[in-house]
Length: 101
Image 1 (cartoon, one colour):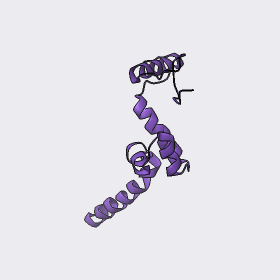
Image 2 (cartoon, helix red, strand yellow):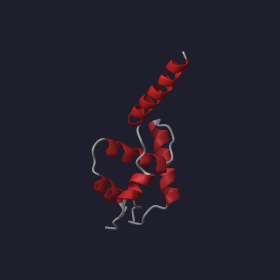
Image 3 (cartoon, one colour):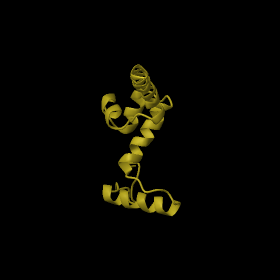
Image 4 (cartoon, one colour):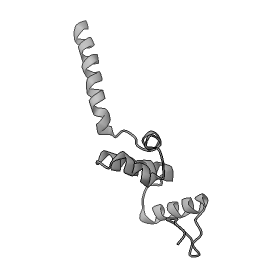
């Protein structure tokens, strides 16, 4: 057993280029929109984080020794996470507009 997740029949790890080509071919066969593997990875970690998976589990799954690395590079805010900030900004903007009227 090689310890790698994706390997050739002989147990050798795929190169990044081989992995990318296979992933893009699979996306095409399934009729999925083509996305970079890095973006797909970030989307997966963001989904898991937004659904309660603890940070230390995300970091371990990503192969990182530092939780901050995972959070900084892979966990992106969701649209719903940003809605509260937008509502707050609207309150400031709306208050300024009312003062002018």
